[in-house]
Length: 304
Ligand code: ADP
Ligand code: MG
Image 1: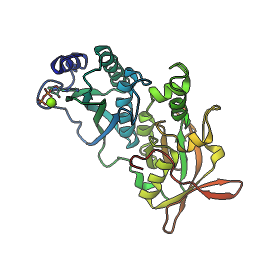
Image 2: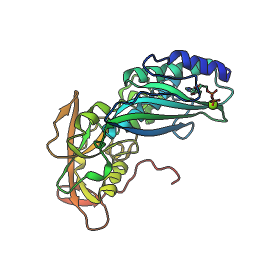
Image 3: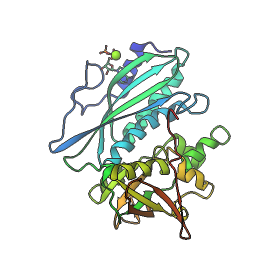
């Protein structure tokens, strides 16, 4: 296993950036800041045996995913990812090959999503912890909150739902090139779509915990209810409705508004329902053949 110093040196070389005033190697990173833009600041943690298992998740996918899920958060505010920090805790028995692959997965994601690793912290721990925090930028006053949905808005989702959950089910039994497994291991954030539609939508959220949970976040924040048609929820043929409704980690976007395009950037946008007014409780209704039932948030919740 690398010493801490050797690991930091490896990161410093691999992520050297000529366009950052001060990157890895000093007490803190120094960034240039675009005039007229507000910072977006977020973090997302991957903890061993909570978010992944060492036996099934390849290290390069963890590196890739730790960046991609933060890019997704920035994109869901309508912003552009700029720079990130990595706090990494590793057990002593992790070998150098694991670290090398992890770093390569991370570097690939940084390149793909145009973001830079500019620092972090490193520690030993009993289990693997990967915490990336990311800073992004959004035009001042233009960030898209969860709270803007209004009665009468349509509800749209990008791409298809449930595949990442299906991939988790299949992981270890089929190859990593299976489409659902790929979506579990190498999620494709929709940040370009988030930025393109930022001026047009009333609310936006990325699907990390599942449609039922994440749409409920919009409803709560906006003080509205919603009716969705289960038959309209886009999913691949081999993915169950259960996974499409409640499965997490797809990193698609849920958007509310009117008159959105049917596709963008080669990704379909599907209208799945309507925002309706609510007197007090913010309910998510599943409506099929004019029968309504409440859809409880059934996605992933920690500490439940
Ligand atoms: P300090 O003593 O100030 O905490 P460290 O020795 O932890 O400094 O880190 C030295 C440099 O390496 C800092 O610039 C820090 O941002 C960077 N660094 C440390 N760990 C990581 C990591 N896991 N990923 C990226 N950069 C890191
Ligand atoms: Mg340190």
